[in-house]
Length: 485
Image (cartoon, rainbow, N blue to C red; front, side, top):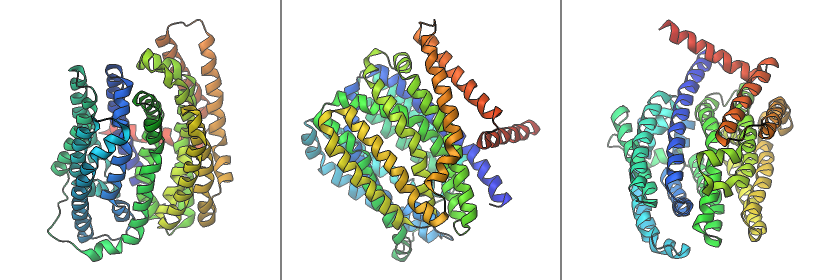
């Protein structure tokens, strides 16, 4: 990796981190407030629609966003063609989803879903007008503008959601918060972004990106269904309240994981694509990316599983206590997620969306088997099945990385062992604090979190963990630049 690309990547990482942490921080605060104001079943109702909205969104993007990032020398004609394609498909998908609203409501036996679907169908159309702008900003590693747009949108829509919840609008607080976020986000992208579509369109341009994009689309479509299949099964077989508990536990686990992996992967996929023909450099970049992700994810998941009960009691109140065992099990999945993500990103960067699709299809078959085997024993059994699938997915995702780049799962695990060991030691020490004389749950939670941070960072510094030292060096360099200004 050249020095220029390295500096550009590090700068992009800083802006992406600022955006993600700021955005997720706002969303976290809003979600906690709403969880205290609303009932679990109201979160369950909105979650019932997740699979249908995710499938609809997959049709709209159709994989062309990834294709535009991956394609070297993409032209304005390519960009405009994708823009008009996205908008046209969004109208078609929204109409079909609205027509299917009565059927969906009848499937769940929840009539109130019909109006919710109509509102969220409009959301799909609005978001389509900003997809190309987001793609181009990511390709150019311009995360500063994305930071501004995302944070303003999250704050404005969050305020709308909280006010509506206080006024007693129930589940509609969540619906209109989503709609408001999309309206603000798309409007701000058009205000701040310099890109504008011209009145040009080319089927040849779409066709040139179809081979890569179509496979990404198919993966996205399948992923939209299978990621949400657990919610679909729980909503159908159990109740909105049960689904609300499941979704809340999953969201608490995914928040720190998606924050960290999203920051790094958002920057690194364009970087991987730019060095796709230099396999030694790509392998080194892959290794650094994985180590950097797990440097944060390992201790976060171990710590979250350790403090799950006091965290739920303090932040969400007693009514959410049933999610504690769910949350602890989800943390195992969170630890494994970066391994899957980095290996799949490497395949995409190589333009091997055919292998990407093959790996994903195998994973989906495993998920179907898991759900069919475990659903009869309840939600805990479903989560255990999901954990088994995650372990198998790690091996599958790394299989082709080994063949193409010579970077095996064994090598990856060896590199990550020091970080995992330190995280485990930290977790044991933090867990032991619950047997101290501290009885107040809030005080215990604060002490456990602070102790975990100090202990883990201290051990990383003492043992000179390479990814940790690189982060420290990056912070020092950034601090000096700010001081000089």
